[in-house]
Image (cartoon, rainbow, N blue to C red; front, top):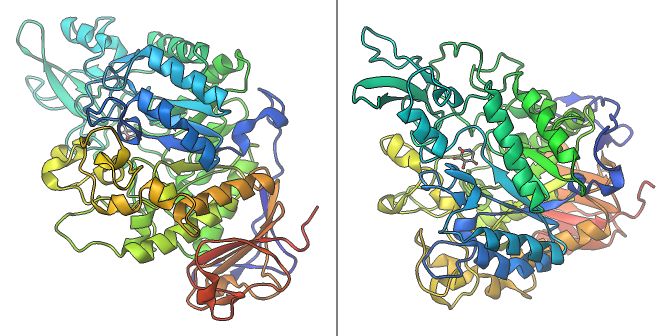
Length: 598
Ligand code: NOJ
């Protein structure tokens, strides 16, 4: 994708100053894998299924694979191309499955390997691709390797799969470094040796139950090639790679005492200064790992893909994960944390296009996932961007109506952008985040931070399918692993289906039009002022892409739409614009482009 400005257009920074259009690097050809025509992931809409909370077939209150399989027709009706499944592997669930005890087995809570095969087969039958989660930075402490490491002696082959070190201090009583865990507290935990004496320490960048693997060890690399093959042989279409920027640590584990944040409200994204990354993130060595994985994927037919979850900045660092011989996609968090303001969003889009064009990779767009406050609520709290800590049940609720209006406008803008888009389960219903009561919280950050960080439970509450059913149709009983708020009933799928103007119908229409107008695969996007009607300095963005003219009014006053352009879809109600032909504030419209660039 490339972005340009129409002749004479300038982009405007936040202070109203004009600057010239973003210069663009020449696109680079992808050198490996299938031809461009086969590269489905370049423009795919990928729907994230969080297995715990999507659909519960057996009624135990925890979602499962048979539940997902039964609900796959929903994804077809919605119009997505693929689904990404968060982890369903055997796990003690200390971090909701991102603590894997066996990478080749399905956790009994979610079903069996046969259920996974059935899900894959049914999805493929329905024309949906399936991406699964891979968690390579750490295992669970219940993984066989970790038990072997605890039973073995310091310096053994078993310990060498993880990052065990002697402690500092006279008796090794101090952690080897000051590194902090992303979830709070020290990133080191001391073990008791097999003979009962206080022993070495192991590194865990996340929960204490998630020991980090040592990726300088060839045995670890071989094991993950084998895990990839295990799932590729079963037919998966790709992998979402958890903490892709964390696998390799700087030689010697140098000292670092700053707080570690994966998801911050201050991720500078495109504005970030180039700087030396901390010793646990974004080390050069990770790229060698992904080149190896790419070679494994390329042995398989069917255009399989890898998508990096890499919280790195600035965007040209992210682009290094999607060079032609590495992964195909990386989540673009710079867009997710961008303030909901015209100039910032335009900057985020331009910077993304520039960085991804330079390596020939498609941009990706995402507004919500299982780690951040749902965007309906984020935007109800503020338009400043960033990801707040989860909601406090005792505090005033954010403005749901304002949040939804902003979220719908942001979503229609996102779904028009060339490249691949991610939709997190429930956003198609406009679900808000939930203020989960403190005594029901399950996210390990809550305990590890001494109740200072509320965590991510609010975006993980089970989905409402039927307004009048027990657990709103999540399962056959009223059981739900996190409490569902009564407001979810009104937002249930069956309350929105075929209801004109509902958020669900807006998503469906957008995905249908996106396909018809080939918006995802549009090679370029041109910013326009729509005949002088849309000005960034007034908070309005207008762009032409594929066959569409898209106008997002994020300003304070209605904006007159160009005469003669057919309105295809609006995130709000044009009647509120005053004259029926003006776009009200906080609203995005898709119009058929009266003069598309061919
Ligand atoms: C990122 C995942 O998205 C998150 O849910 C998890 O807690 C961490 N990685 C650790 O695996």
